[in-house]
Length: 339
Image (cartoon, rainbow, N blue to C red; front, side, top):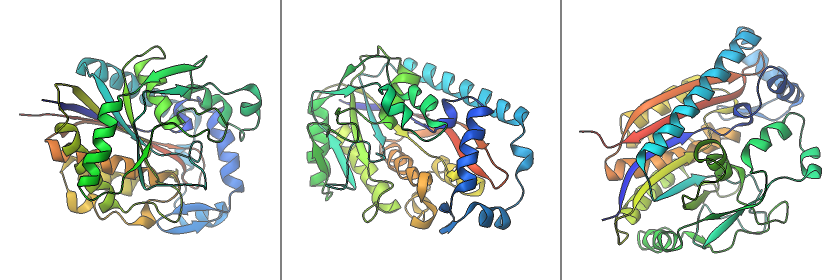
């Protein structure tokens, strides 16, 4: 019998891959110029956000930044060991796409890859040079130093598509990763980061990539739809013939690019408590900008609740980069079967 043996969630923001203070402060310069910062259902300029919130100056000293960076690196090292200990045969990774892969031609709320392999392609020098200040260094943490063809589990991907369709989801299916922004058919960073940081560039563990349209109007799925989809994916995996050991992964989040510690705290507690009502009712206004990636975690929490996994460890670091509270809240969480 195929079994979901464990799960984990991880942020994948640039501040995990480019060290403070310089890289974080560079992104802070961009924040200060922004007119479109999303927070609790509103959209603000930097000055408006600064006036609205408390002063976070104490959170952006170099000492605090370094402490948070060190803590995040230690948490990710711990997650790497956790994954290795699970001895999984395949990883089902749920993440979002920043229009790296899917464009305006077609955006499904949920889409599952069911091909044989995916390309993981490094950036060219020209592509890195075109990135916003502070992002190129971080982007290098998402890609290998040469093109790698990563194995995927065709049969399980197909089974998840057909099983979730039978469970009343109109699940998108993709057998070939689209050419995407860089016209190279690469898997996007939310998936690539899992291999580069946790599994190792040379890992041959196959994956099933599942895309959720977390960011893009007009069709991001509701929190309830994400939670119910997760439960349907859990049922699908468990009904797959064979004796695979499967791990499930949520990649992205937590609140960003305006950090909301209250939201993050309530959200993490709900996952600990198996609080389906909360997880199914997170308002769309709370899941805007980078915080939209909470949808990936909601889906994996649904999988965990369906198959009887519980949260066993949580690390959390709000990595601020300006006095107005912009930055990226980093979360690292494990689900396991408990007595």
